[in-house]
Image (cartoon, rainbow, N blue to C red; front, top):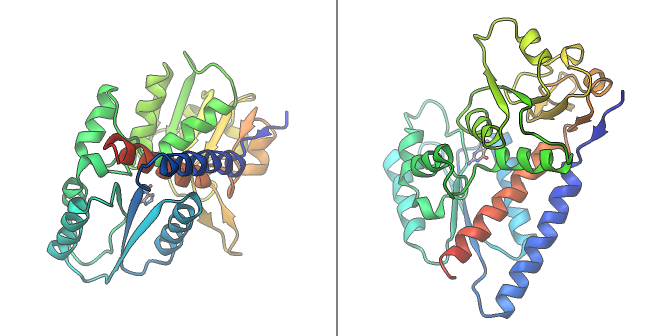
Length: 286
Ligand code: GUN
């Protein structure tokens, strides 16, 4: 079997076109342009690239971007003050503090996420919104997991009753995507660094979501023929090439559908961020 490609680049481009049209119609009808604040603390090169791409996508869709670039040593209280200022700013409908915060400066990441107004939480990382996700009530959903689910819907395959194996238990991807898969009536297994016989667990999956940040941890020959493979990993190999958490070429020989890296889940994260911001803006009647 050769897998069909789940093209996140194409899907995200079409979602962004829809968002741009919605915004331009809304503005013509007297609404305010949605505003997204991006906060980058420090100079981590990967975070800088992610934030730059998010800002560019904002501009392209007609959203207003409010960007704060803060020194790595700005400190917890000053960062909380910036968040408070953005919470109070009526033109800002969505706030995103890029994670991780710089190491070695004693930041309390959870306290920063809790300080964001839950109604402006474009990432869906506030504990109230995470609680709502667990309860299945409406709330902003974390962008990467939301993008994974949108790609899964593209396959048109029935998810109910399927065995979904999530590799990775992060708050940003592993845990929320597990809840979303459960919402679709999958039987969900969450694997992590202490999981015994990962190959056997992954081998029993109908749906594999790899989100560990370990290059090619999931071997192609583990994949059950016909499985759907979603690779959230973005890693660089020794030659500087971007690779995922799954051995793509060998996995693609067995899977029914697979996301490439780059061009799979990555672009979907940004499209979902724009969607969350648009929803936050117009929920407030802006
Ligand atoms: N770091 C890695 N992914 C994300 C994300 O989706 N949002 C934020 N704020 N930080 C991240």
